[in-house]
Image (tube, rainbow, N blue to C red; front, side, top):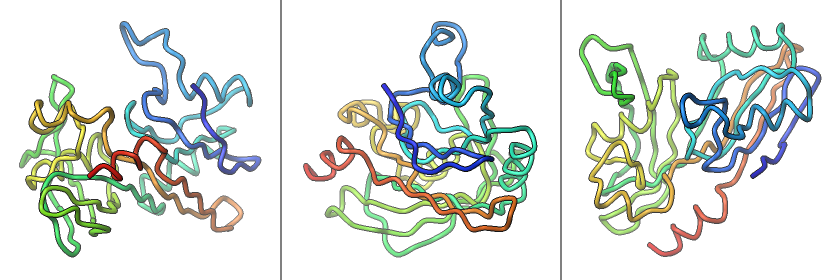
Length: 213
């Protein structure tokens, strides 16, 4: 398994991560798995993870090449000065556009849930295509970056991401070979003030599932 390099500079590398590949090393049984980090480390030497994508989520991901760039790029995420868009297929019919503003809290089970004492979390979304009343393809943008944010927010609205084995009806979700969530676009200003834009179209297996709906 490999990753396509979309764009790079002296400060960063942007890759297209395939579904099924860990971003960084896991724990326990996953500790020895090949990761995107290990693949890039072999190519570039020391590399720094700026953010993560869940194992089964595909798409655009950003790494820093040096400590100063890592500090700067991490700061963009913390101050919400970076635009990140996802594509997701969700259960049910959604219309128009909207914003989900619900606090999220991580549980010991690894799941995340909406909780009044959780961290402030906001997700924006807009409909891209309806597949009858059963499925909707949306673009989602995270204003805050919490673990499983898009997945939990959509689940809380009654529209879980298709194929998500943590959130949603298990019998329905296991019909999909992967979670239908893809990191689509990334936009930010680098340290020199130049606007960087990167995009990765959903992979073939994602599009094939859409074609079958």
